[in-house]
Image (cartoon, rainbow, N blue to C red):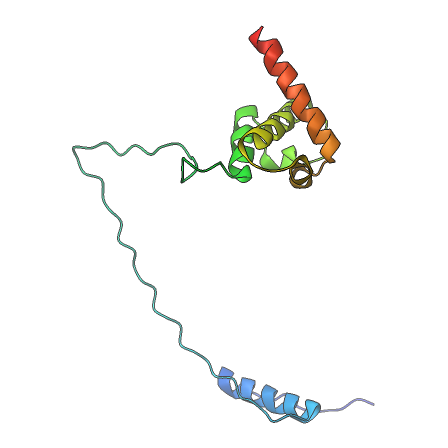
Length: 149
């Protein structure tokens, strides 16, 4: 059975929301609660300091905001990815490319050294088992000792 009912044309969003609330109330058996629309706040312009002529505007490289706190693992991941020329997504991917494996090993070493994360937590973030993380750290330390010799 096909019903031939014309669609109702609403003149405003408030009228449409009121009709929808009334329909829901009929179907659910609850009193209709009409929604009210709140006005959006006006955007506020943020003042920007302009550089002066006597001081050059030199931006520092990206670094942790609090230099006394341990770095965040995402910062370490970005640092290692940029150093090795891979993307941050590739480090956690299952690829076995040599550059990515070296970057992953270094990231595991840095996360173990500079954060208070366990090998299990590091493994969860990198998509690896904790024993694989321990092996990565061991391999990176051996590579560092070999490079120093």
